[in-house]
Length: 186
Image (cartoon, rainbow, N blue to C red; front, side):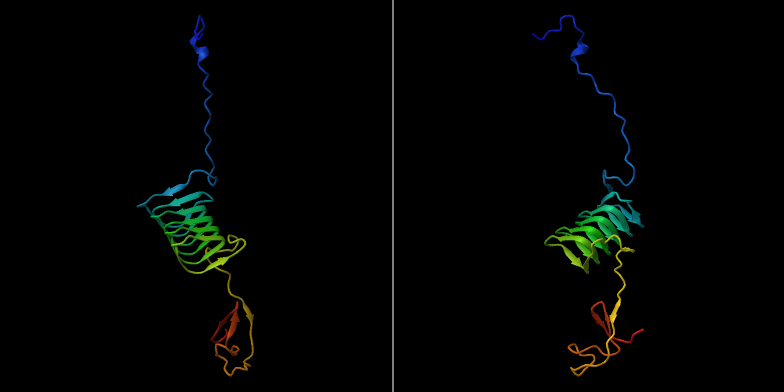
């Protein structure tokens, strides 16, 4: 039933496909993450040009990239600006990203400007967080907009004190973005 009577054996072997030319992906395209291994320390600014970056070592400087993951042993001492940031390790500096995720063993010392923020139970976050529809459009890593003087009020107060917590601000106080700043106006 399955004999090769007079036929060459090559016809029974499937033909191998033509070798496919491997194309290198240009820098900045989705692909394999660049990994900074545990035990590696880099000093200086890292510009990942929209690529994926995994930090298991230490970076002392600012990080700009498309997607940043700080591993359990990873540490970043500097500002981070990225499309998405996932922290399992430690970040000492401001974070500005559309999507920020702090895992259960994350430790972040600095402000976070985000469009989406998730914090797992057990994560440590010491700083302020601020929602922005497009956090990457503002210039400067981690720098919030400069406060604007909203209004200045006269010294009139019906509660008997210009500097009272419950009274109106005095003439040397200013209202700055909803916060009363005491002292001389400049």
